[in-house]
Image 1 (cartoon, rainbow, N blue to C red):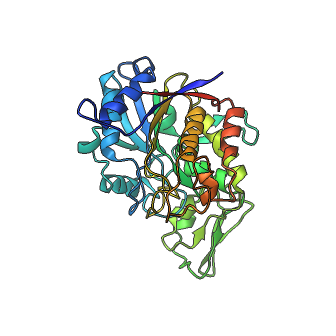
Image 2: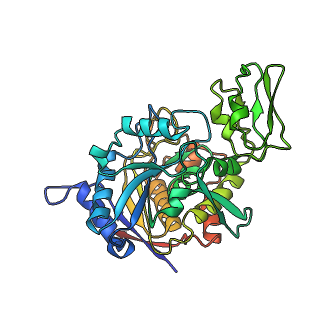
Length: 368
């Protein structure tokens, strides 16, 4: 069985601009039958780290929002807090960053709601029959929403080779506990030299795994459950995640989390990939290097696996750009993702997502 992936290149003219193409892509995915009047629609996007510029332009997200409104949906934009300490570590900072990056209501015509609450711990445990995981911690507002529309910037990624719909679902919809579960099997570490004994970590720990001893925080790895609360609570950056999982296992866990993110939604799902400004790394960085290929277009599908496979194939079919982070695979057909991250077997995420029943790697590309 093959699923359709609808593709729009970036050619425009007086008859139709790119916003019109976005609308046609969404209609091609039977939008009106996926959203009922009054449905609360979570539009999962990446707000972009401060200093980054390759995230999807808010004016394009506005068109996505307007199409959802046109069929009676009630959309809200959503993202989750980061596991690491940065500009998006909790809701106040993350939403401030989002607005500074252009995702204000006046631009996008929708409210902004963090899917995992104020500090990244408002979540629902979703049972899962995974190869690795039996339950996953998903942001509560993703579960509560009637419809999920994941709009992803397709680019390279340091841990997964590329980041597209699967990463937007698996990592982007996970709570802080879920992100910790995907990245590490070890308790966080405390760097005593940075610790000032303020006790912020002690107050936030819900499992009595931290004590202040001789003016320094000490973490008991036996009592620690890996929720990650202490990491972002520490203003001194003395507590850090031990990033010990290998990339293949992270991708498998990510695919299982993506399966949990869409659980119970049935056909009330839509996925879009913007294959533009294909940067060498994630939009979580506070910078963005030159794109490794020229802008390609926008894809949409009801199958996130088919969508990511088609997007990867389109990138690999393109000629690579010189004087970029792309070291090998410049020829059309060359592996662009291994050309940037040679140690990453990026196909693991696609194969495992297909194994989980999330979608099909075989697809029919339909150009609109």
